[in-house]
Image (cartoon, helix red, strand yellow):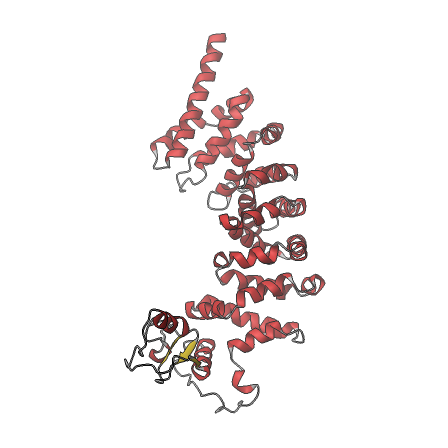
Amino acid sequence: MSIPHLFRCPISLDLFIDPVTLCTGQTYDRCSIQKWLEDGNLTCPVTMQPLHDTTLVPNHTLRHLIEQWILKGPDPNHQLKQPGTGRNSGPTGDMELSLTTLKCLLQSKSATSDAKIDVLKKVRSLSIESDVGRACLIQLGFFPLLLELIFQSPNAFLLCNQELLELSLECLLTLSPSSHLDSLDEVLTRDHNFASLVLFLGRGNAKIKISLCHLLETIAMSESTEALIIKIGQSPRVMQSLVSILDTKTDLLVSDACVRAINGLCHPMVNRENAIKEGVMHSLVQFLLNTSNAKNASPKALAAVDWLLELEIGKKNIAKLRDNNLIKVLVKHIFMVSSENEGSEYAASILLTMCRDSSWARGKAVHAGVVTQLLFLIQSQCNSRAKTKARALLMLLRSKCRRCDQKM
């Protein structure tokens, strides 16, 4: 929605986040005017009058009007009212539609679950429908507040109010969690909060599990949270919960989110042995067998399997499966005309590992048409790593075939 002229800082031209007024009567966003003053300027940016006093006075009236405008949305018939002038004016009426009030309701221990659910629906709507609303919610500290609500409330209370937990997680994910990794790290490294994460993964509904998996995926994408992702990946209960989600096969969206989380957890080498011990390899293979459509999380599953095969225990684990259908799925993923072939590199790499030590795997791969698939891949616009793996697999198959011919 278009920002009214009066709601823009004269310096940054962005929406006021923390409006403050100078002695000249001009209002600016706090961070913008502070930078102006810190640069040695002692004049008002708009009027150029000398500043005899650099005190910054919060402009509560303007802030209230902005919050009211954000909460009402882009309604051309909506008339902004000055605080204290409406029929609801008074101790609570002025702040009835204030972001600050929404925040206080979420923090309140006396507010009912229904009241908090209503607030969360409003927060979700603001964050999704408006970049301005999302920025204000972030600036006002809603992200750490939601983290506290999710992980520091009594577990029994949240499990009995799964809609509240579900909405809290949805709101959290709309507020740029990748920009709040420090907060996530601080909260989830505490044992009590970590236990809540494990509990919700195991006993939450489908939407809760999807949101938690997305959160794990976000955490795993940054090097700054490596210690946290190692702690999560080393937890048998977390891996067991994720394996259980995959094995249940009740919802493809849940399974996809789960695979993405597992992929992130398996990226650090130190987590891979625990993942294999808890049955991740078998569950990923079953996922690939049941959902061979490349549009889902199959490339992520292929990547995780490939990483697990870097360990000897991983190679032994997949060798025990001896599944003809797995070979067919891997061959199919090497080159798919209707897809971007994101998983080609990993499918070729997995087959290379399997075929190196198994004549059974080589025979099944050739019978499934792997040579043609590899030639298509090499001629395609795939990345250089995928082509390198494809050539290596072709050379291996050619070499093994020659040896067989010589023996005959």
